[in-house]
Each structure stands twice: as structure tokens, then as C-alpha cells.
Amino acid sequence: MTLHVTNTLTGEKEPFEPRDPENVLLYYCGLTVSDPPHLGHARSWVHVDVMHRWLEHRSYDVRHVENFTDVNEKIVARVGEDDLGESEADVAETYIRRTIDDMRSLNLLRAEVYPRVSEHVPEIIDLVETLIEKGYAYESNGSVYFDVSSFDEYGKLSNQELGEIESQGDPDERTEKRNPADFALWKAGGVDADAVAEHRHEGVDHGEDPPEGLTWDSPWGEGRPGWHIECSAMSMTHLDETLDVHVGGRDLVFPHHENEIAQSEAATGQQFANYWLHCELFQMDEEKMSSSLGNFVTVDEAIDRWGTNVMRTFLTAGSYNSKQLYSDETIAEAEERWDQLERAYEAAVEALDSPAASSKVDDESLRDEIDGSREAFATAMNDDFNTREAQSALLSVATAINRHLEESAADAGGDAEHGTGAGSYDYRGLRRAVETLEELGGVLGLSFTGDTTGSAELAGDVVDLVLDVREREREAGNYERADELRDELETLGIEVQDTDEGATYRLPSGE
Image (tube, rainbow, N blue to C red; front, side, top):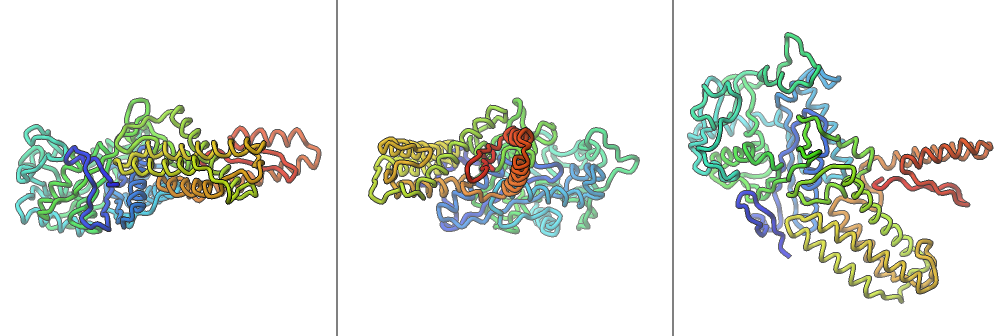
């Protein structure tokens, strides 16, 4: 089956054909590290991760690059706040460290490299010089601007006519620019104090001496790179002049991605990216979840509360190019879906590894259902990475497992839940089901074996410690206190079961 993707550049769903039939160059516009990562960022991260995983599943070698924007007035606005650091570089370092931790907790595959703007200023200056030499950019008062009228195809991504585009950049740039829609490639001097004040959190006062951002020497004087030029320089440095796939948020189509195309193609004469994929917005109370609006749930809060698997089930419940709403109800639905998958997997493993699994039993319905689910999963993923339908295909595997176990146990007069009904399970069918959940669940970044980078191991250690204390209380005759400890665990969603061999427990779904 051919993979098809919806290309923002053409507005069409197209067959995906990378320039090299064995390799894919994928670039994702990464995070401006000025605030804690939230679920809006996580949604895009997870969907890019699923794209990466599915492309690898299709035997492509994926070169995935994702940047950190560590030079920005929003970062400067955080200087001196909440022990984040006393310089732009310090604040960026603090949030990069936190961002990487959050990426690992979401079980994301690592990119080939995470370039930072501050490390690529020489490449940025070289690119700006090329644009000036080719007549696409001009210097004005120590700043450099891209002349949008010089690039005939300007507006082709966002489908805008040049005459309809309003002024870009800060109001104080207007006197320096030839056209209001021209955009900055290099800004003279340091970060603008008014811009820092605009992004300062309420209640934070920098006094009479606002923090200063980083500056670099350039042929036009001391200054800082413009926002748009950064991604062009970093992607071409680490990948190529032409990318196969460029991914980003829908809100970046204009001006950021439009400007990336103009400056990159003007400099190289080559198409910058063949496929532009845009993740739709994540909504909370009908508004986009964003740091600037303050209506966000941080990634670490979400992982601590629900675990990696539940969050990935939630974030892949809708396709990357469909809007998604965060609410208690949608999270609860994800918890239920993951619980259904996990319980079916655990039941299948238990039956598979029991004496009741037989090499002589052949449940054709089970095997057909598994094969049908695999085909449905592949069809969904090849249809523009349709994770919603792919997740449904995984749930059909769980349904097939449950049906087989129930019918097999019933035929033998046994109990599927407790694994009785000797000789009644289809070993090969169950093995295929377990392998399917592990393999295709892995494409969605789900782990049925506990192999994620979330907090499950620590949570298990803590529960073991509490149960040890509870057992000592019981041995001492303090049954009321022992019951209180059990109730407290169950309040946290941890199911405790007393058996003849001792207490066992089950962590909340996703951990």
C-alpha cells in the first residue's frame, strides 16, 4: 500500500515519494524554550514521533531533525524569574533540560540531532549574505530584511496575494523597510526592551535595568538573527537544501513557514520541502492551548497524573490534522481505551504462557480477526497517518482476544479470567495477537511491557514500600491502619489484591 499525505503546499492528499527511495529527510519546527512544555506541544511531538515510527516501519531510514529556538525575547523575559537563570542562555538551558526530560517521559524516539539557534549563527549569517548577494535582501540601519516582492512565488503556502499581506514585524521596523510585508533576517542591536516587557509574566519586575539578550558580530554590525531565518539555516545544515517532509503547527503556516520557503528557495534555487504537514491546534475550553494564554497543562503534570500510555492513547485518538479538545471526558475515554488494550494483552500473555495453550487448537476466527486488524491498521496509517482509525484497529485486536478467551473457556467449562479450561486456547493465534499489539502498538508509541521512560518504575517501588509497611501493621495487629493504607492506595487508582502469597497490586492505566 502506498502512503498518502495531505500536503499543505498543494492542498491535496498525495502519494508520498521521497527523493531517495530508502531515506526520508524530516524536519520539525521545535520549541521556543521560554516556558514549560505543555500538552499542545506534546500533541505535535507525539504525532511527529508516530510519523517517524511508521516511516521506519515501512523500512525507510528516517533522518529526523528538530530544533530548539534558544534565542528569543520571550526567553529574555524569563531572566531572573523563579531561579530560571540570570541570562538568556541560562534560561534556555533550564527549559531545554526540562523539555528533553518531557520528551523522554512521552516515549519519543530521539531525533538525529536537536540543533540550537545559538550554535548556528555563522550559518545564519552566511545565508543572509547569500540572499543579499542574489538581490533578495537588503541592509537598513544595521538590520537586514527580505524583499518579499523579489520572490515571485511568495504566498504559495498560505495562498495569499502579496497585496493582501499586512505589515510583518515590529512597528518600529516600518521606516526601515521597503515594503510593509518585508521580514527581518537580521536585527541590529540587542533584544527590544518593549518586547521583553510584553512577554514578562505578571508580577515580575526587572527594575530599571531590563535583562539583555545575546548579540553577535556580523557584517552589518552587532545584532541578533531573525526568527524565520533560523529554521532554514539549521535544516539545511543538518539535512539538505531540499527536505522530504517539513512538519509544524497549523499556526505557523504564515508567516513562519511562508518565510522559510521564500528565503530558502531564493538562496538555493531549489524547492525547500516537497511535503508540508501541519498539526492542528489543541484546544482547551474552545481556545488554543498555549503558553501565552496561560491555559495549559504541562507535560510533566499530565505524565505524573495519567502515565505515558494513557497520554499517548489520548493524543493519538485524533489524527494530526484534526483539532482535539482536552477535557476530563476525553481523558477518561483514553484511560478506558488503554485499559481495554492492556487488560486484553495481559490476559493473552497469561493464556499463551499457560498449559491451556495448545498447538492443536486452531481458532480461524481469531487469526482472521488479527490479520484483518493488521490490514486495517496499515490502511489507516497509510491514509495520512490516521491514528484515530489505527487505534480502532488495535482495539479490535483486544476484542478478538477477549472473544477467543471467553469462548475457549466456556467450551471447556472453565473461566477465562482465571485461565482455566485446559487445552482450549489457540497458541499460535494468541501469539500472533500479542505480537501484533506489541508491534503495532509500538508504532503509536505504546508499551505493553512497561518499557517506557515515564515514572512507572519509581511508582512501583513506592507502592512496594507502602505495602511492606501495611504488612508490618497487619502483623502487629493494627488492622485499622493497614486498611487505611490500602484505601489511600486505591484512592490513587492503585488496585490492591490480597492473596495467599501476599498482596499484589495494579498501577493506574499507563504506568
